[in-house]
Length: 105
Image (cartoon, rainbow, N blue to C red; front, side, top):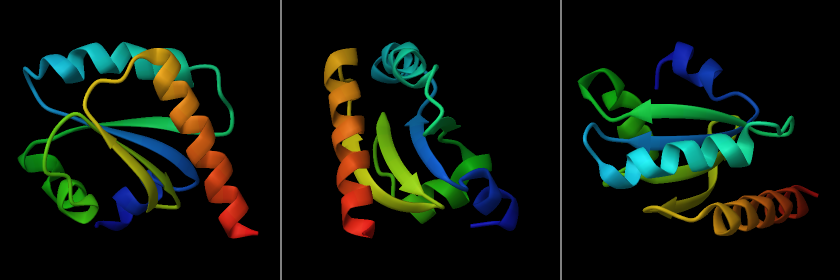
């Protein structure tokens, strides 16, 4: 992954991989915005799968969209696929972040 992209994924990041014309991706995007919009502990990065983002897609081993990855300084610690409703997504993100920080202790 390029140095520019390494900087892009510094800190606690939710990376949402999507594809053009993907209905699951289109419905998931506003849900992620709603869940993460007001949070200060994690930020959202949207990555549309294309030739321009091939290095990021390859680095994270994304094979289908939508894929949501939680990462800390570019190191993945959780992943889910497909559309998830807001309540489920929020619970999943909170649980995985808590697990991640428990493991770091």
